[in-house]
Image (cartoon, rainbow, N blue to C red; front, side, top):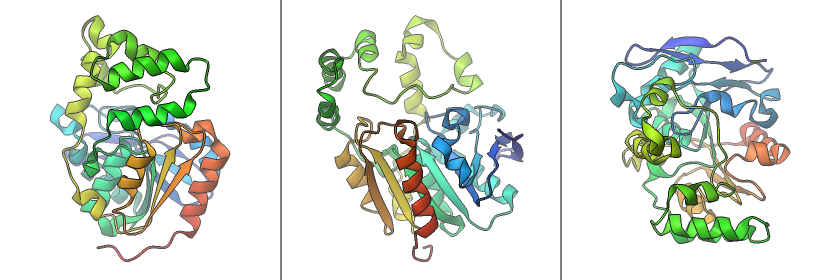
Length: 292
């Protein structure tokens, strides 16, 4: 059962919600992706709640958290102090962090700004924006070709080629549905209200808004993460090809890269047993150096 959310004040005064999944284990603060998704889509993370108390931060303007007065504060780097406010509210000297997709940007930026407050980092199929890594269209296509035996592959791959070449249309974006991240939850209320017209409903306007929500290039985010880091990638995930996952994980002084075969962008849904085993083993045994 999802317990009532803890309430805390964000760095700029808006109340934040942090629903918890109670368990006997120590807390694990979870940062959702999207960007700007309600944390409800994470569910129990495939059963991870049986091993850790999952604290799901609803980012400002999403889920049960309040809308910010300054819409510019949706920017990822400006939400770092929201995570710090949650840590202080929980009364913990250090927190273990799990960031999924775009939530990994916030996790590594937090680790870079508050390294002494981080225990361990679990980065599930992370966005690479905070590390300044560019993923080429060919790298995504190479990952997609792993699934060439699927009956839907020819049409979906042709559409993905068009998108990778910058010739994508609303139809091609629909056709590549088997490849990209599966739909995960809902957006925050402010973002939903700002949609306008059929083109935005098909995704064009939404993608433009996402760019404004992405963090600026902060390479110091990865260099600042001196604690143990697990990067869990999906073998089928065109959002994070294996070459990009390796480049992303390399700068972490105490990083561990694990590619989960047969998993896409949500490995806890595709193979929950393997995802839980990897995450719990890392959290239980990982050792790292002193924070920088």
